[in-house]
Image (cartoon, rainbow, N blue to C red; front, side, top):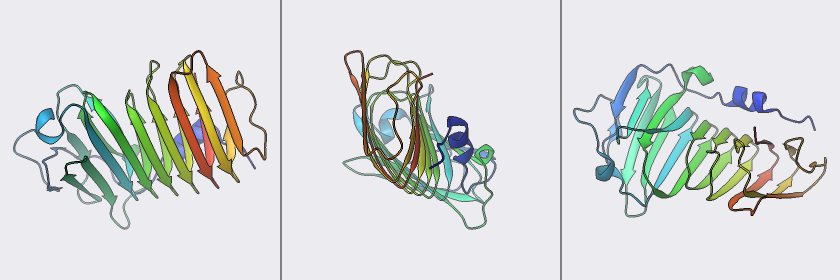
Length: 231
């Protein structure tokens, strides 16, 4: 199979959504389709040490931390809906693209979350594009026929579990020198840095440890393309 490059993964992070035209604070237990009157403080939607789940359905979504302690979403309500649900287990944000919405990474929805401690962040792509950036927490990602990029901080020291089915994805370690990568895959194209042991075509497993192996990166792929990068 033809190997996928990091540049190609970035290009493939393009699914339904239209150009950002509104900046809306995210209220709890509501459908976000209009500007909110007041911002949501960090502890009113999700307390420190809680779980957060973000789902991209036929939409392209980028998640970043916000220094102002607010949940905020920049999007065009004519092209998607953003819904939130609060439960005992997690605060959930779902972005769903509408039929005939525009395609393109430049048209992505921006979701901002408080820069705080989380027990677990779950990312789900259902035929969507999803990018998670700068999150030093346990992360679980399921990518079903979409494209996902996980851009980890260089000092990442937690656990990342990634499952991709008929999908493309990438994990960027940003120079981390203390991690363990464990991967299992079926009918996949996988690339790793040139300085790592090679991942041969037709392989079904791959593992590599750097330093003490503190950060754990666990990958399971089926009929997928995937890139590991540590620049």
